[in-house]
Length: 603
Image 1 (cartoon, rainbow, N blue to C red):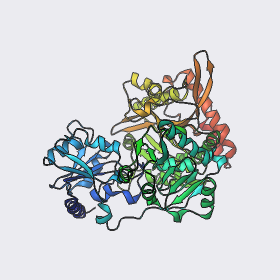
Image 2 (cartoon, rainbow, N blue to C red; image 1 turned 90 degrees about the vertical axis):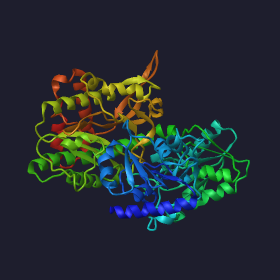
Image 3 (cartoon, rainbow, N blue to C red; image 1 turned 90 degrees about the horizontal axis):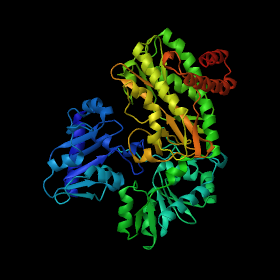
Image 4 (cartoon, rainbow, N blue to C red; image 1 turned 120 degrees about the vertical axis):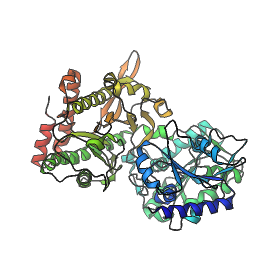
């Protein structure tokens, strides 16, 4: 984008800041609902800075300096996009990079005020950004209005896609049952609670058994939900509510009101009615409660735990989605073998081909995230996404890392395969095998009920650690049922975080995706989605194990079988037998069937 446009936008923000009497203004990458993918209406940080990466925090001071913090995934991109703008690039995570609070302290006059707009801020985020800022010298304050309402003249409207009802037999639980459980969980944490308020869009969609299309890759709809003891109220654009959806909600005991109507609900509520919500609630809600004299309290939040344990119906939906996805992947991989040899294929062209094959499957609703197709050195970039400038041609040699997923009407998929397009080097073969060993070790784990992600993580890393390799991202994340491909509260990773201390129970879904990335040369990742299942009772308690949900052959061509144990060989044979058994009946092309038979042949 032309840097002069960014300069004019920053100038307009500074004029507004002068009227608001703030010395600095924080613009995070966030919407009022903490969405992973932000609707265009709330992409204020991108509009202001010109930086289009998915993560970053911008800060503008009245005194002339501005800065943007982002992580290592985006250093090169941000440097190019911020060139000529007022924004200095702050490379987050480097020792020499000051955090936001330290940078502000160096810029602000004593008594300076740091502003933010409450709808685009949570208490958790505000604390992390301003922690360390001397409260005796500086203060932070929510501004009275959203600056982008005035200075962003062509701001996109709020999305308002139609809603679809997920049948109870597909969800495995009714909306009234879920709403009752949500209210009871809030009341258990705070017996005086009158209302439980939700702003997380995936939680609202799950609770009401409704799906929308407001956010790319995620079947969600912009809304708030307030749950009372006997009734709930959904706040959303009422134009999206068809007669069928209105009737469904009425039968479920759910009233509806306009999206911003939650403010009137709070204003009209008795001062004795206590609201409870999670600490990720945006601060506009807490401000409205305070200004209306309505008490509120942050409480431990249990909705993610409820969602994490999938019902039998949801588990069946995952299995069906994986079979449909597996058919598309087999067709794609068979095509890829010939297409690479024929030449003319690129990272972007194979992405288009795979998406088209998925779209042929029944109930396809779109991708679950942007496909990562990284060939050669691009495979070493963990979150690589090809564009017109970087789109690499594929050659009949080396490794292709392909991470992709789909949304079907019955479930969500997420899979990574690293594929040998031809001869591979000894190091590529060794690294591929170490990653495969880690993938198998985690997949075949048996462990006590209540084991946490940080304990499970070692299985995936042990073999590569012994060889001196490691990777920086998490080993596994939860997956939503026809919801977001990244879902909490649990993760498998080596770092101590709240998500790695969540206990695993039967019914929880998680990915298994170890990797090794050799910068500038190649990357390897192998990923299946797993279901946690009961694995028997012993004198030492209840045990669990994993059922691989993903159905797609693992490429054996780059494997160094001298490093593979008999137990690992048996796991591969068993997994491939399952893939073959489940997918063969769904393949109507003899060539696809022949390819699958060969790819899953016992070793």
